[in-house]
Amino acid sequence: MSKQFGIAESLARLGIKSENLGSSTGENWMDSGKEYIASISPADGTLIGKVQVTDEETYEKVITTAQVAFEKWRLIPAPQRGEIVREIGNALREVKADLGKLVSYEMGKSYQEGLGEVQEMIDICDFAVGLSRQLYGLTMHSERPGHRMYEQWHPLGIVGIISAFNFPVAVWSWNTALAWVCGDVTVWKPSEKAPLSGIACQLIVGKIFRKHGMPEGISSLIVGDYKVGELLSHDSRIPLVSATGSTRMGKLVGKAVGERLGRSLLELGGNNAIIITEDADMDIAIRGALFGAVGTAGQRCTSTRRLIIHESVFDSIKERLASAYSKLVIGNPLDEKNHVGPLIDQDVGKMYEHALQKVKEEGGKAVVEGGVLIGEGYESGCYVKPAIYEAENHFEIVQHETFAPILYLIKYKTLAEAIAIQNGVPQGLSSAIMTTNMREAEAFLSAAGSDCGIANVNIGTSGAEIGGAFGGEKETGGGRESGSDAWKAYMRRQTNTINYSTALPLAQGIKFDI
Image 1: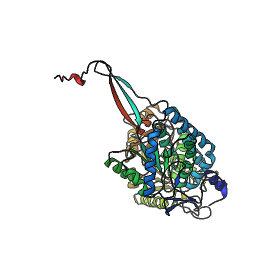
Image 2: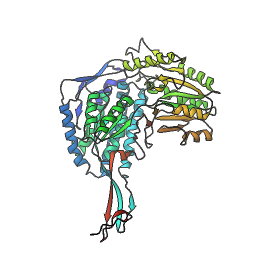
Image 3: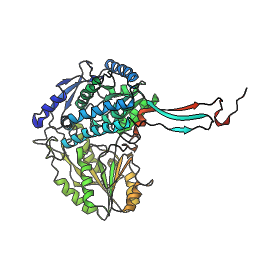
Image 4: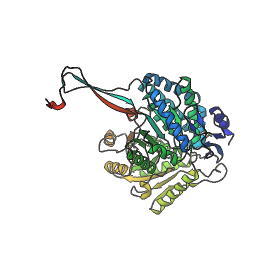
């Protein structure tokens, strides 16, 4: 492990060891055997630590404990649950620098992005605290005299969470903070590519629940590959599985959960585009496209994959982007002078190289050539050059989401054509338009505009803000997290009719006299 940038000290303060148990129900950690997975930093290719894989026997212990915990946790008043989540937010504030550094080192995003991810965790805790006093139902009038109707929301049960490597802690917090104030308990399987971030989070929250005298099992952790995820998907004791990752993975999870008539909340692939009109503020357009395309080395589900550019400004945008790309500094993400860090591993690098080859074969023209970087500072084999290609939307590779910094430039003539291109992919997560023309902006936001779950004006596609429900349509899965009325996904709705009269009239005026 690197001793640079204080990473060793941060890991020690977070409680991360060279070998770590991977199964926990809070402060209780269980030994599940001899199988371990290794966490290798893409920053320098060195071993950070090992995490024990959860076996089926240990999984059963975790779920059984969670079931018992739910029976107690659901009876805690929601505002009191919110108070515990508030304290978790405060605990995250205290470790923000260290946890952000772990996220950066284990996943490869820049240290600033790592800090930003922990800030997301803090923000969702704040959001959930307010929500804990706003789990409102509705009161309705009955058609029957002397009757009253209302609806209420009850805790759902165990929520299974499967998260992806690109946001190894934030996505977990989006789900857990809401689930906990709703009265649910959670079982989390973090990405096998970033398991230490999961260990760190569990160590933080376990102490808070114990401090308040809460039972084991409110926050649980299991570790492993897709096989451990399948245990969650097929388990009828888990009414909701929230899964973030590839569309392929999401279809498998959705099928497994659907077959047992459970609920799934899916946050899957994106193939996001920015439309740059002739009326755009070009400085804002370039900045938005640049970070959207190369931030997190193009490994955000909201990363900008396509730029749909009006023909009148196409050449100037192309030139300015190429110039901006030439100034990017690629290297260790913990070094804040660098703009772009590594891909998560060499396997993703191979997919990146395949995509470069594919776009060339389909007729794409290189604006900025890509390639895997070698030499001093790039020993991990995970560093690549952000690439730009002129392409057509119908190219097979353009229709596919490559989780890497490859940007496709596509020319358009009319706004209707641009919107059709934007919508003309299987995914539907994030979208944006750069324009100062109100008519263009409103058309993009209309029912005939973007078909994505997120549609922005004069900001890029990348990123999420707490308070607005995050998620997408089509092959993105349809799930919504972290804002608005997203909390309803974590609860069960119940309609109640109360008869306070001395009669028993039937609905719809039905007569049933004997």
